[in-house]
Length: 208
Image (cartoon, rainbow, N blue to C red; front, side, top):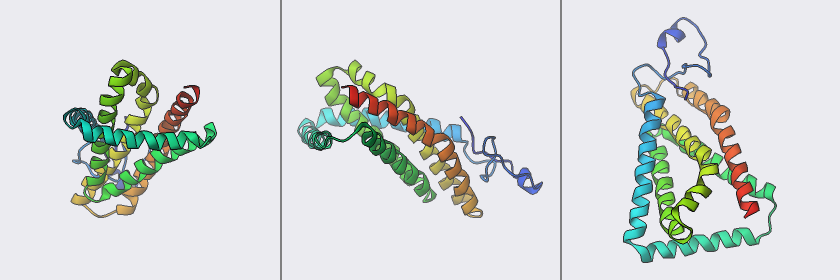
């Protein structure tokens, strides 16, 4: 995984940072992207467990929420939309939410952390109820084909956002450049991952 760590000496020497290397406007001494990604991954797994536990501890409330969600999906499916429309809805939904979670990371990195936590909570919630209905292995099988790209892509986008927030706490200079680097990396790395994940998820929906 690429790091956003940047050696200040490169800027001083007039060397333009490369977006495909370790370069970025973020200063040395900041937490590395790999470390932030790892911590957010742990948070995601922990919130998945918490969502599973809460669904188990408060079954009546959880069942009501599950029925509301099912009603939404029934309405969604009954609209007789094409596979392309399904793909666009999934892809744009994931991309737009991840993008804004990243950008809003400039506010101390709080929003991307909450975004990861809530997504994990929802998946844990699904794992409890759908796992009981269809079996946990089948649930994992249905989630894995697109989740193996979608989940890391969302965590990566949020990692960019957290790193932005941390860097701006220490030094607000070059805000525009820092955001620009993160946005370019988002479109070069995160968007293609979400594109493939949306295509796989659409295929699974269509063939069911």
